[in-house]
Image 1: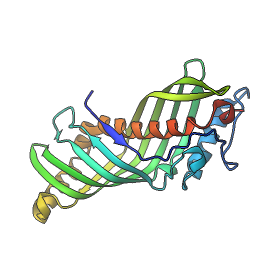
Image 2: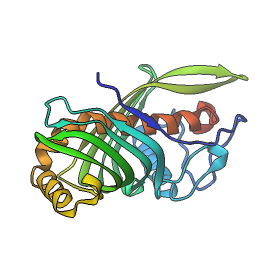
Image 3: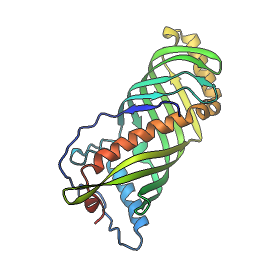
Length: 244
């Protein structure tokens, strides 16, 4: 697997915490638990337009990621490492969740849904080749994914602490399948507008091939970010608190 890294700056609180009253809770013994979990996840995501320090949940409007590195693509369409800093992701809180489940025996979670638009604003740095064209530059970038079908799967382990059970998520699998992707990298070739506009045009005219080549890198990067968020939250919120 090619290297992908993501860094999310989180304020860590070590004391046990409870969900805010505007979050929905479920009882793991109720007959239609999956329906309740889906509703609870949807409400939690909708409420995440602000920061909840007591449970370590950052704002998703926008979700700020300090660093994201995407490795070169697997098919040599995008033969360049993409280094992003000071990223802001807009639109994740607008996701419509279609399914969210806990498998308590298998110690995993699974969810799927649709995000109408993910807008990624970052400072970028690239130096390599895209579609055999030399590309070099650094500056602001905007990447937009439209109508994104999303699936998430996380495995976890239980961590007993102070008489309660906490969970630590160990692996993740995220898929992002958009209907459309657009790219805009400013200041390519040290601000040469003609060359920069040409590369952006090529990227957007061939967005399917470009995105397909780096798809796994973006999925792994976002998966790491989400895993950091939920691990931070569930290190404070016990399973007994999350599920009555």
